Length: 186
Image (cartoon, rainbow, N blue to C red):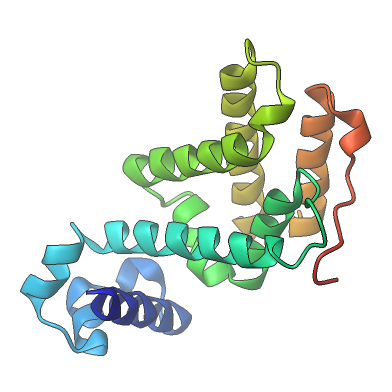
């Protein structure tokens, strides 16, 4: 089962490097992965579901792997910086998730994923009475900044967007936990 999901994920990523996401069909994906249509639908509802699940799993895996490289506890914003680096490194993968063409279901799911990520890594530093509101604010801010990075009409780099996000975090009452993260594999 895991091998099939990896084959479908890899097929989608390869196709996204060759074609615009909107032009890729489920048939293209299953042809590339060499799996049947019923097998695809046993795992995913549609290509958006495949993209979403694959990217969430990939992001979580990358963040875990990169956080493991830190000596001791990583800085609180390290997972967020890693996310910005991933978006910067793989724009063709993340653009369909945070671009103008993402649908409402994808948008809600991605925003919820960001909220979970923020809760996992930042909630202990938040006032419990305000944690949910702060995480909601920061998750929408994170989504908006990542969308701006993906928008070719804007000239916002992933690093600049990360610094904006760090300022939002500092404005939420954490100025000493600052902007620069670094460390780990750097």
